[in-house]
Length: 236
Image 1 (cartoon, rainbow, N blue to C red):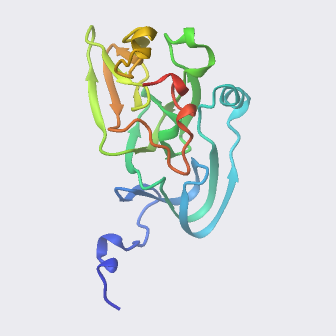
Image 2: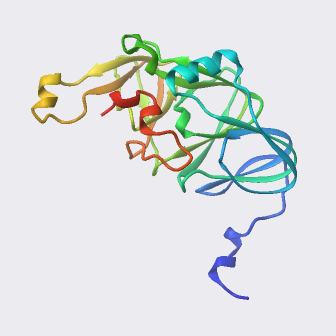
Image 3: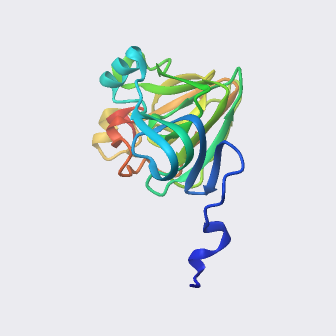
């Protein structure tokens, strides 16, 4: 049988080493020899001797997720074999997190990660005036993290005294050491009179970077609704 379907870049190859790699731009492959943690529902295929079960996030993270809607519904994938992960045909990217790094990621953009990474749901500093809705997923430790992006990402450097302002629905993540505040760009009266529609932005200052996507968070079938993201219904 002949077809473009069977070109080399589309074919699943035999595993050469344990761990995470890109199958292609829309799919992550993980060769499991032990355990990997992934978003529930993100597995699209596997082969080998593997088991899947819901993963407890710990009492603190469970309570925060119940209150805020933020976080990652996780599953543990254990055994030996290969698993392919994807989410709504979104672009996939791998990040090597090293000791001393701390990365704050919107839970809707987390696909899977190595068990060597620690994961906590933390309140976004500087946003306390909005109560329980401003939480993000902070990763530390050492290992690989796979994230998704709705379109090609944009990474914006952040320098001291040069804050970057981002749409709260478009932001994927940022260096966790950055200082964050909420910027109100116009009055409620202006909004009611037909203003720009961008009432609040997340302002980030310090030394680091912020990752955004060219989208305001179109929800795929395995993602949280827009109301469950970083700012819920407060974003532009």
